[in-house]
Length: 400
Image 1: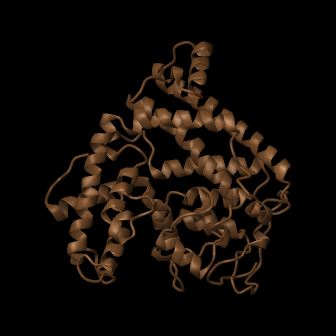
Image 2 (image 1 turned 30 degrees about the vertical axis):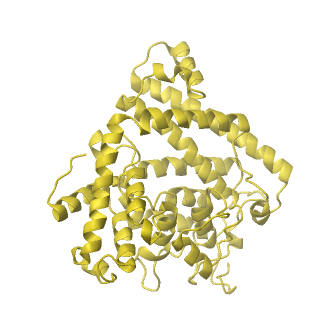
Image 3 (image 1 turned 30 degrees about the horizontal axis):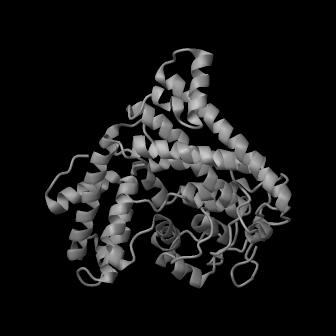
């Protein structure tokens, strides 16, 4: 294995098992920004995965909302449970396609690290509050977390992940080209290029699609449990409707938990089978002989079929309308945005309200340096901590 300067820095443990030619190989990794001896018992990607799991940012996902806020109850997904579900699907897909399972799992576990408290509502509010200071992007913040903000090691900031893990984190949804790139990504890319205009390796592509599979299924689960829509409402919904009817025809009337279990496993199975078939078809057509050939291909190699992609889009449209824009959810969204906006305004105006180590990195009130520090501080908050800090600073309690 080599670091960016090309010097060998340690042994690589290659586990038994045959990877495809187009898989990412640990022994061919481009290394880490800061040279380290590699483990004798783990591949570099296994080590990346373990560093993500042991990070502070990963633990905080336990108390960060996926769609619902905390008062909705313990049954619903958080960013942590969602990330675990995505990693399970990504690892299974990688195994079937003979990819590096550990790299796919690493990217899946890290893909939501940069999310704010209160789900997308928090991100929208923080982006709006910081618009004059380049805004906020959760993917860029995830990169900043794993390269700067995590302080676990004596010799460097961040987690010192491999190039392939960082590339997958930044580009799992595809190339970053044709428009402006968020500052944390641009500045890191200038230091260690991530080839932003190319597609990532197949492990990252699979992790991104595993995210789609996980969230459409668990949003159906959460939406039904919360009563935002009913079993009957699913009847005419593309993709989900057919499976809902099949479950009813095969089993008669079921208690809600059993119905959800049946529809989710059928829907998830259909999505996975389609993804594997279409990806194998594309692999056969492109015939990539290496991970580099996957990156150089003129489009994604991992994908759903066109017909399945259209049905997924229709299902997402249903969920957007009936779940994400449901009055119960929107009421909490408005309050969550208020919390984030007022936290940013208060902390930017008086950086002394921040913990001492954060305050020391600030400039003057409301300047660009202070805004960047406050943005990072708020982005790291859990839902519960954000509410507590807001109440302490503004002397106003907001119940979500």
